Length: 132
Length: 136
Image 1 (cartoon, rainbow over the protein chains, first blue to last red):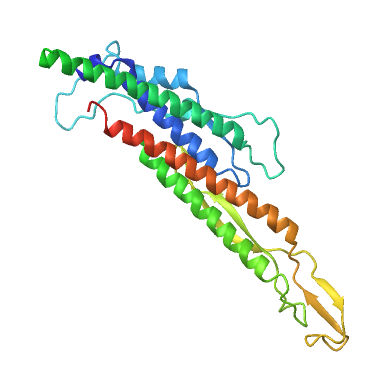
Image 2: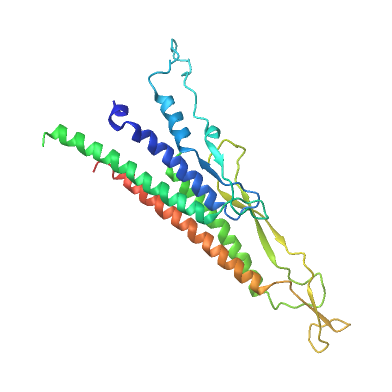
């Protein structure tokens, strides 16, 4: 039920959160030698999240309480890509703080927008329930 | 996978930068600590940062920690001043290999990095608060 209410935004929020984490990690490691900056391939991550919940996939039947569910866990390695540095530094660090900051800001804005979408969905349903 | 992780990561970044600022302060404070032999002379200290991997390469985001603090092995400044109270038999004193200009630049870089982590924390806090307020 909740899945149909929020649609894609629920998954988008998860991917946005993940991306925020990865970018925060890049910024925290801005001075770490040999650290390689990473970013989330949003399209790939979102479709991976979609697939996980998609109704098209055939779930494994659980005939005993001891059976594990058949769904695969999200493998973050698939859509985490290394960033190509424009000006590589001598210590092997590929974090460019200004780019990371801009990306973090962009991600925060999109996160905010996703929250806004979810919020208006909730408000809509509230209105319908109250019959206002 | 949650925004709370961001607070941990930025916190680790802030801690690492604090250690860096501490070593810079120590270097600056000891810039004139002269001595009469090579062994006892203060050498400039530099922290080495390392990513916290915790044995899991699949983890999407990682914090940072100070791996070790190394001493700069650059040659010390020898100065001939026989009237100095710390001068050795040949009349030499040894000054630390602290480069004040370098330390100042290092300090600016450290404080900028610290500020960046604060900003990341603030933004994440706002997003978390917005999430808590959902539907109100």
